[in-house]
Each structure stands twice: as structure tokens, then as C-alpha cells.
Image 1 (cartoon, helix red, strand yellow):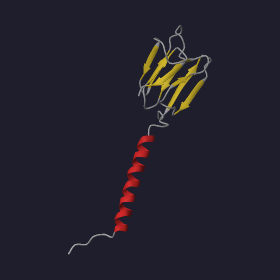
Image 2 (cartoon, helix red, strand yellow; image 1 turned 30 degrees about the vertical axis):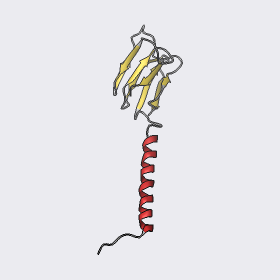
Image 3 (cartoon, rainbow, N blue to C red; image 1 turned 90 degrees about the vertical axis):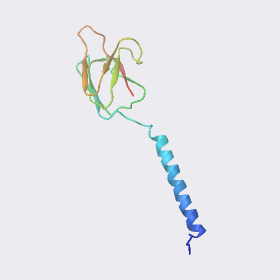
Image 4 (cartoon, one colour; image 1 turned 120 degrees about the horizontal axis):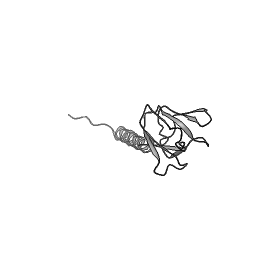
Length: 118
């Protein structure tokens, strides 16, 4: 003698399974939104002001202070590239790995923007 579940129980289980699958897809699809580089990026401006940005977004180009930065500390979990331009372009750049610091020479151009490597 075999026992089968009533049709309402089967429909309920199917609905729960379908809802769980849709929820999983929705969470996976949105997981890239708002990703941040965990930790701070700190820099010293030409006026010796220290600016600290906590967990900035990993997407896009980030401008530094108007007078630029002479020293940049990457204390995030993601590597960055520094640029002397305001729009993260150009040949004059420096790669700064996570937990490292870059300090400009006295006659070098200041860093004006950065982006994350991801």
C-alpha cells in the first residue's frame, strides 16, 4: 500500500520551491550592486591635510582633493591604481597593492584620481 500526498500539499511544496529559486536568483543578480572595498583609503593633500575615505565603491573613478594627494595609503582589501589626471586616464599611474602606501617624490605631479582593480 503506497501513500501519496494530497494535491494541495504538492502544490504548496512546488510553490515554496519556486519561490526559493526566484529569491536565490534575485539575490544573486543584485549581489554586485553597491560593492565596496572593505577598509579605508587615506591620503595626504598638498596642504598636509589627511583625508580618509571608508569603504569606497569599487566601481568607477574616484577623484582626490582639488590640490591632489602626495601620499596615498591603501588599507582596503582591493588593489588600486593612482593617476595624475582627474579622470583615471593617462600614462602616469602607480599600482598600489592592498595594505601598501605610495608617496610622491618632491618634484612629481600629485595624484588626482584612483580606481580599484577588480
